[in-house]
Image 1 (spheres, one colour):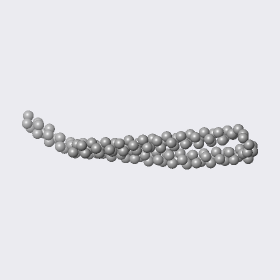
Image 2 (cartoon, rainbow, N blue to C red; image 1 turned 90 degrees about the vertical axis):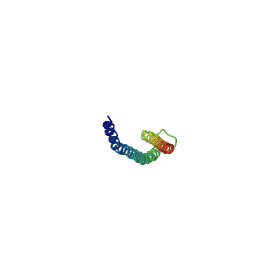
Image 3 (cartoon, rainbow, N blue to C red; image 1 turned 180 degrees about the vertical axis):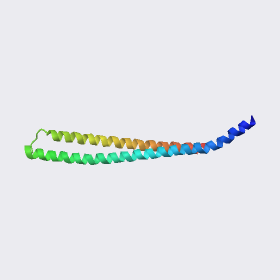
Image 4 (cartoon, one colour; image 1 turned 30 degrees about the vertical axis):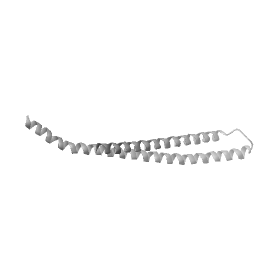
Length: 124
C-alpha cells in the first residue's frame, strides 16, 4: 500500500508544471484573442468613419445638385438625399454602438485585472 502512495505522489509533481503550463498558455491565448478583437473593433470603427465621410460628401453633392436644378427655396428632398441622410444616420449610430462596446470591453478587462490582482494579494 505504501508503494502505491509513493507512486501516486511522485506523479503529482510532474503533472503540476504541465498543468501550470497549460493554464498559462490558455491565459495567453485568451489575452491574444482579446487583443485581436480590440484591434478588429478599432479597424471596423476607422472603416465606418471613412464610409461616413464618403456618405456625408455624397449627401452634400446631392444637396448641391438638387439646389442647382430646383433652386434654393424650400423643396422636397430628392430620393438620393434621403438615402444618403439615412445612411449617414445609420453609420453614426453604428460608430457610437461600437465605441460603447469597446469601452465596455475595456472596463471588463480593467475589472478582471483588478480582481485578479487583488485576489492574488489576499492569498499570499
